[in-house]
Image (cartoon, rainbow, N blue to C red):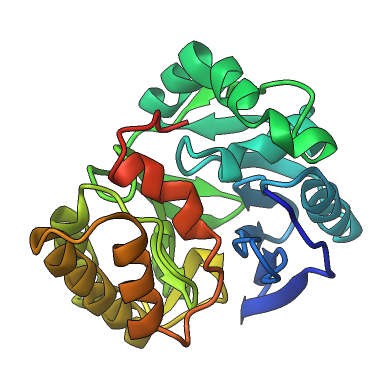
Length: 275
């Protein structure tokens, strides 16, 4: 897949006393998929979420984190899709990395296969697979004075997905449970995914950090529910492949990053390996 590189988008999404939340978004151009990674900047330490996909953006994300002048306490990997963990091997080998046990097991068992499956990326792929060295358990933890709530969501965009909530800041780091302004990476778990997003609408958070695209509010959560509902109905009606892609592109012309269809269609309809 060809990629066009452009400058990333970097925004400070929330300020509260001595805490700042930063979002770093890669290119929206052409077939790129606007990977979004995040930094929670506390009084003395940084906590990062995900590591970017393409090597140049992973390096720039690390460079940006380093400009903040505080040590990286840890990096949380939300799930096992390569557009979230490939950058770990490029720019974060020296950082403590935490993930769900199922994500760690997948990378141990299939990480090299996944990397090999992306050989066409050339220098945009990492040289090595980095397996997280820490396990995240659902529950609560305070890091640098900031309260984090961790949970696991199953069978939505991916089989196991980590969510991180910062209740005092009103922030939900949803990652690939939410696609902000971009087309979604669809899976067979669309109905379960709708239920999870519907639950998020009832909670107190007002800022949602997506895995792709810009930070969002509950309106974008609702738009994701509508998108998933339309996609699930089209699949139930027997629509597949190019017909399905053309239907979704025509229905949602405002959404960006159409290259994501070519990534997930072989998996959704063709049974290709989910690497």
